Image (tube, rainbow, N blue to C red; front, side, top):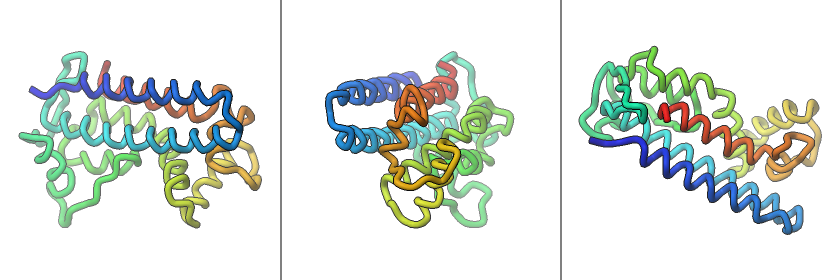
Length: 201
């Protein structure tokens, strides 16, 4: 039977490496530290999205949480591949595109598969603001277009209290004015708490 503890260990191992990489950049120039922070942030987003997909696919197959409890399902699937297909097509007029960095869209993909009161859905709801922050920063680092800039400005407004100019993703992620420890570390550690809570580890 599939297990979730390997995914838990993998996520923590990979984020340990990201934290160690950040700690090793203290002697670098500010510009180089900002670039590294953005790369680390992209890697974190990829890790989280990939783990969301595999964790929920396994849960839809009835894989127990790490504490041994079993998810309450509406339509149990026979394999990870079948679970992904069911998320896209089960009881839908046309297939949906799955997204693993948006809380409401994650919950929508599971609406016909997982009991609405199930623990995993509550966790996604509780971490909704974290998913939004993760998505806005990730998209602006990756694309830097008008749409991503508009969402990034919302974060600048929230964290700085004003829509000030010249704030890049790297600045936001590292500035002590925004957060101590820096926001990049907060994002990593919050993602670790999310995974731990999600898996009942």
